[in-house]
Length: 81
Image 1 (cartoon, rainbow, N blue to C red):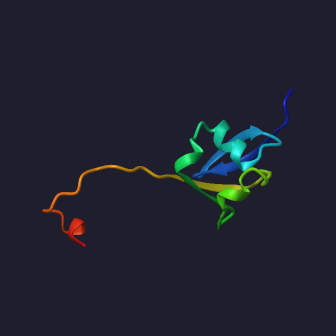
Image 2: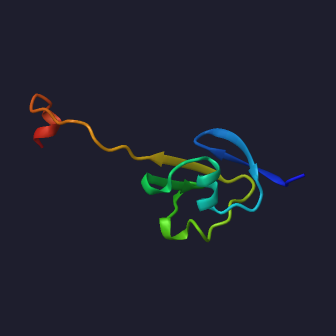
Image 3: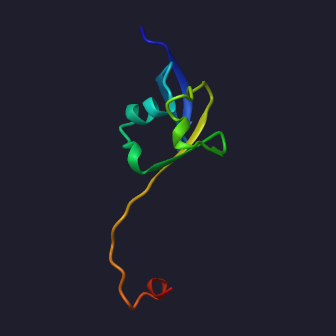
């Protein structure tokens, strides 16, 4: 039996394998690491530390996935700024 821990990801309780790093957590959640930002326990976690930061019981993560694209039309005032 594999050991597990409990964490919160984007407000949802999750049971995940013990021993993961933040980088491995993203893989476990099937989230591409190329366009995400990670907040761990209310602090932004720099990408350079993802491979070295162990996920611990009770950690709270907010993971934001950036989406690009779209079209800017001149009728949208925000596009004119």
